[in-house]
Image (cartoon, rainbow, N blue to C red; front, side, top):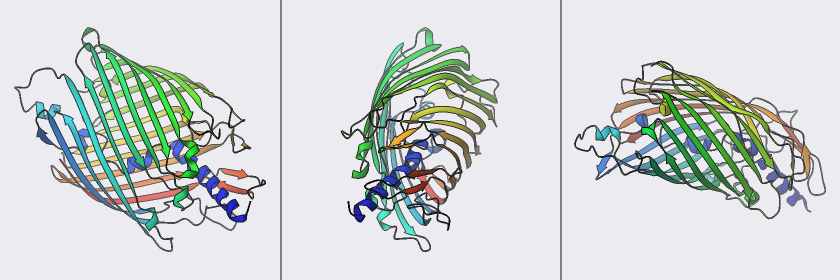
Length: 471
């Protein structure tokens, strides 16, 4: 094989390793940063426009920003000779995000129309958004024009007979996420498309004090670059959740799932496998100002060592604990809503496992803090941050074995918005992401490639200023 082919192989492997952890640890991060707009609809949406039994919520947001390390590289020093870890390249960014939501009439509008007292036969909600991203070089960085891209998505969710003893629900979604690797070549980008469909059946005997749902979800992930088509996969999930309200605002809860992950590549480069887990716990208000979520359970993985001979399955504890203090009392919150409020400070810990694009799976232990404060319907401050320990089992990539790798990561995001009116907001976003541990993946030389090392450490800061119109 010639030198050019060797370099291409090295680029592809380097991009794979560097972004493998990113995708595993932060699934959907790029989409979340393209948000339409705020996760809590009570804050993110306005009154809407009524059209019969539905209401429309259009919106558009524009942002200007600076990204200190767009490719998430570790950077070059005289002691480092890692492929594509140099140089760190910064970019100025422009992003515009139109969005549209269609939903059945909400509680806010129903309260204004006392004539509508009949129980709804169904509820429906769908949304559509596209986020255009333009990038410009900062300093001596390379030409970023080829990095322009569009993120986008659409989803819907419905429930038939939502207040009856037995109800049916369905959902669907499509998401397109553009993600660069530490190789600036577009052919080595991690742009991917995800399509999902789901359905479920819920049982509510006895007026809603107890409910139980069983459901099925199917997701397909497609990687647009030829270099990573072997990562294309189907993920089927059979899930079940239950809740028993033994106090007016407190409930015992259960969730369990069985995931079946299968890669579509015929080259046997990845191991398919199954993940089974179940948790039980409690969720609810302790007082009008404090709520507690506590979940404890067990998870196990079953990956077959067909593509990667080195394998170690997971068989241990998973769970979550979260304590929230509401700055203002929330007497109307229900058990399912106990962790949601307009003005809240919360702290928590979670341990979970998920499929990984680097090894078969990863385990995440994360401590996090969150705070949201909405002042007088005009000024919003939302702070989210966490420290994660990411652990992979021993794995084998393209015939080269590695020992178990662990990584420490930090993520912090501050979002502020001032509402000049009921439908116009001026906002700012500060975000910092970092891999604090220098994890070097060493690739020995073989018949087709020279030996090299990839460093997964990086530090990235983003700042955005924007304006948002919403209804």
